[in-house]
Length: 622
Image 1 (cartoon, rainbow, N blue to C red):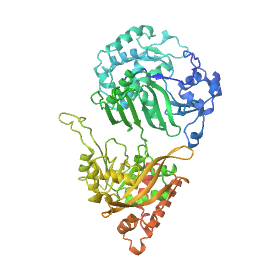
Image 2: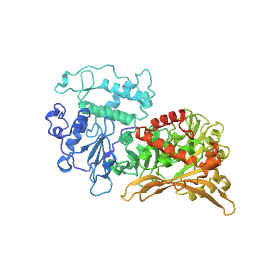
Image 3: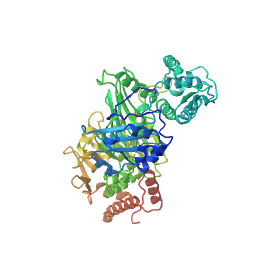
Image 4: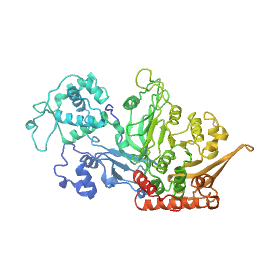
């Protein structure tokens, strides 16, 4: 990634601050520091640039921001939030109200936020070019590259201690050596001769030690170190957004601001924006190169995965995107949400989760269906903890999103045409190809990221041969799902559809207070196809009641799967089939107890459920 001059459009007029004054020489005497709450003082002491930002912020107009270490649900009810929270050790986010818009402001506070080091960076980059060529080995991971950059910066620049005369600063190791080839490979970016010319012109204005090291203030040094890592190793201006665990979606619609969807504050607009179409084009090209999916005018659309696992869609150029290039990023959670996390948010309840538990454990095939961003993949991923821990699982996706807790897990990802490595390897591998291969791998369960096309026929073929299949699907109702399955391009014969046992309808709905929430609208058993009427029989097991925001077990006592499939597998005689419903209730109580005991996180829950099964607590009558 190369450094781009992306605009920061603050929603307030910054207060004048003398950046040459060392605010940290004596923090206790700073008037603003004295006014800060205790937790804010601790943040400032560890991240001095935060105090500089607060000095530019018109505190008399807005008041001192509320500093929160984490955002809880009650924060979302604030009408005019003036909140700062940490994203990581170096970056903070300021949420500020906009009285003229429904979207409030999202202000990333980075070490480089206030300090323009554009005149110094070309000099630093040129010196890096000279030093990189002297490396004995090429670092291969981002962590190693980051360490090398920091070490080399310390060898070409020095921080001027407070009160020390510049002329007294000396030291340093290594002489510059020629050659830029390794740097280009090392940083995956371009350093042109023009950069060298700029740096040579400006270097005479920079103070140097006798051995040629650049003398920087502490804040300049930290800003340059942060920018070098951010723009050369990480994802450039996207870094604070990708680092923020509260963000769900990041989007840039063209020239203008970056918009985000926030888990707490919902729709926000960032103060970071692209002013020029050319720079936006250059940025998306660099992003595409960073993820090894080059984008051109001939191939202007890219669907790919970022290094952190987030999904990105890029549309390049003004010919097909009139406002300029655009991109959308769907963030993924570092740790997947567990079924108990979803229970906490009332997306599902214990009883319906327990019903899914017993169905998945005994090999029922299911689809989680709904519209875009309704929480389909999140729910499907949470359900994977119900798969028996000894099972072998194969996941098939076009962009990897699923995380399975099982050790015996084969993770396969489709390869787009023309993206293969080496001669003759550019034909691509489709989900259809991978699904056919999975049938030869003897899995206990097959998980497909999304059924969209001809792979659907193979998935239903797998169900017929006894391979349970779990997938997501785009349809807002059971009827629409069946219509899509039986129509182009999937073309499943109607008599095959009942190989699919369960359809979960997931949706993003608005509550009476206007809050958008994700709910399991219904859980349905597909019973069979009626050749005479040409229709399908399905029974709603659970339905969501929107007024009370609760789930009703409408199918209790009439479950085809529980009574005719699972009870038979368990050897329960016809006279005692009603006991299977007691098993669902027992598992609901187990989930509730695990929740109260604190085993909520994805991995913790899976490990506890494994212990429960090993101890024989899930057998009928235990």
